[in-house]
Length: 493
Image (cartoon, rainbow, N blue to C red; front, side):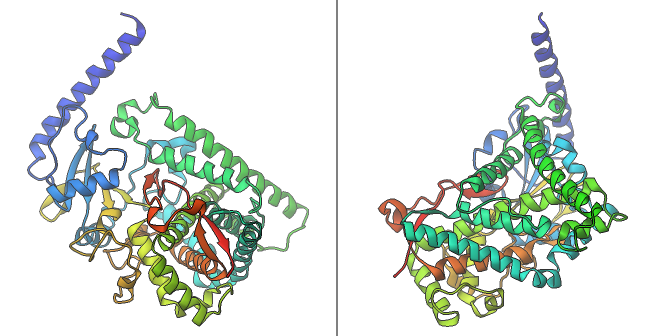
């Protein structure tokens, strides 16, 4: 037998033995597990996931209930699909469920050991999260950086104005991404990383999307950990290349700042990187680089995707666009850029953003894990089980939402449900101690960017496409994006 055949034989033998052990263990505890679909040998329920697991799991939950167990290869997964159970997991027992399910792709460059997103709740995690929140997302820090955000939105409107003058379409997601990218790079390093009038933003966006795709791609290693050392699909290897390029970028920017500080050519706390470097007793160089990486990945793709989906829904449903423009004209004045201080006076625009986050959550699943057996509603979530909160399914549950698949901003004019983690019918940012720390900034940016785009220009779809013909299909990497990028032509009336 040749070496390849021997390796294959050994792998199949080990897998079958482990599967047998798993089945024996599962037989003992099956009565305590939540219900779930019938298992196939070795692979369990893997074939049930499909290429859009958020939708597949929502369908399965209709049969097996709002708490459901799946066997994904060697891994037991528990899927949560109701607000009551999400509250149980994310609030009432949030410490027990505070661990993260970490895709093997995120083991590249040991990212899971340094990232605030993936670290377990611990003193180190609390310290890093406090540093991030107080120096970027506190109310006082956000207020202090308003002028920077105003300038970046002004640059976006100028770019769209040039497209308007030239009669060419704007790729909404790319333009919003470039704005978010430059906002974050200026907040961190006081530099623009891209020029809205050039194609460099597309390069960065494709780069970030590739990372999201690799992180969210079905990976045999995640279902069969025995394969982790050989990385059979090459996912971790490709992620290592992608993350390595970003870490090199951030490392270079930090080196430049350290050199300037050595030459005493900075004025102290000019931006976040200066603040972090001044905290050298609290945070080291590696954690600074990884925090920059977290902010870069989490703050660009999700914000730009939400703006793109919101614009797509408004151009797909022109009556809502007209209502939004009427509110803006009355409160702000036609053609003016929105200020953050205006947000509280724009309930319809806020409702549009909430409805977009409901029907198109940027992160369709919240990934958690338990490190000990946990009882939930008379069921046992076993030690080591993955816990997936299907945010997408909860936000489209017909038992909660009237006409759940229909985009209707008005529903939030009649409801006090918000996205800040207290109303478990709508948790696009998560909830509990693991809630996204960037929530306050994301809400400000999405509302101001969206409002400024629709108040400054009229819009029509490229190629003469009628509103009802607009493709509204999604695609999933780690985040949920529009399958076909939205391209629209700005014009003035």
